[in-house]
Length: 311
Image (cartoon, rainbow, N blue to C red; front, top):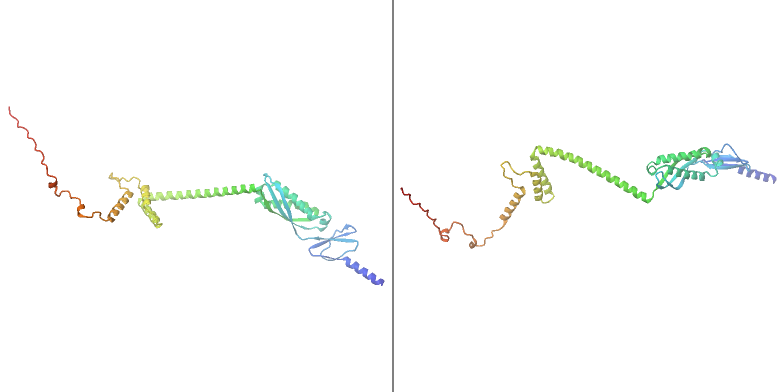
């Protein structure tokens, strides 16, 4: 009976002495309250019951969100910035002995460092140059945690930068004005290049006047293809391209619009039916029956001068 009790006690001691450390963990052993310099690797390990106490430390990378921090940038703009910190324990003994709760401690350090970086940077840098801000944050936090606490900061990323509504509207107006300025510059550049081409084309047309008429006819064909009235276009181009219509003989040349109007009037008269209904409406022909209606009046005779008498 006594042997059974002893065997049972030995079994309980063995069970209490055997500990299993996972692959992602390391074991820190305290013997009689004093930490051992070497941590226990993953696998099966033995400790002395009631003498040793082992604490397991996770060696995986931890992603911890930093609460949003309100701050004022260097150019006096109120912003709200939140971030995320990636860290892992590289020295489990320091992480257990030198700091009470390293997760909470890293969170506080990240918040204070984030506020400090916001105050040193301006708004444009926060929005466009986040890589430099992230690198500066990582350096600040890693300096405070790696050597004393045995915790390595792997990455620090700014998640979001919240701006006031008034600042958002101002930035939207600024961006719209910048786009409008670029559009006007591009339009003006296009008009400048087009004016150069037009000037070159005008010089070529000035060497041969027939080319201007060909261009006029081409324009008329293009307008006629759209089923529009070409009369006003002809008048406009005739006035624009006519210039001095006086030929060499000194007689002014008839305007193209007048010739067209006259031709339209003649065509309209030719299409109208004759308005004479009977023979009585025929007007008399000049020269016929002129003697009956109007008797001829003889011209008065010339008075002869009396002959001169010789004295």
